[in-house]
Length: 253
Ligand code: GLP
Image (cartoon, rainbow, N blue to C red; front, side, top):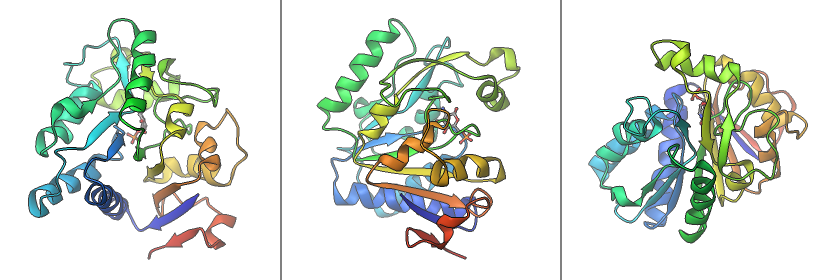
């Protein structure tokens, strides 16, 4: 995996937005895998700015999001469906029919199977954006998730519920389960970019990049993928040791 260490959140976002724009310019029919959470928010703002200024054309781009809560309707203000529409889709010239999120309503098992099929039918994900949880979860794949997992229902850990409670009025209102792309579904993406900012992600980043590959660290499976770029700020990178000295790591000061 390649690691790019930048100064701060803004520079992480600028680097990620530039990579998304480059992907769409190079292939206007790209299939993008998208993430939610606080981490990609600024990246999406910058993609919107470029869409306005330089008219990067999203008309024929397709998107597949990583996950969605179960137990709140998609129209809920804190659903990932609402997040994506408010933070990106409503501000760029994408065809909404080309945007997909797994559905946390109805038959979850069937939704999961169909979601993986739909990704396959679209030709697979060209560029997958990932955030990371403090416990190294990717999408909602918590520690203990099998490498062979596909899209389906997952149980959130206490630490994830606590981390995500910052958006809800009370911790009791945070859904306890979600539908998430599995590790195997994510690993099928042709290219993956993982973003992390802040000292609270430093342990997870060290385990992702320099740790042993293990179900206990879901993000560590990314070490097996042929094209992963980790874009981290100094704070999130502060526990990286040997990797900093390798040719696979670029540090921007
Ligand atoms: C959530 C999402 C993940 C996200 C992670 C980190 O639980 N399901 O896709 O990467 O938490 O979120 P944040 O970027 O807000 O730290």
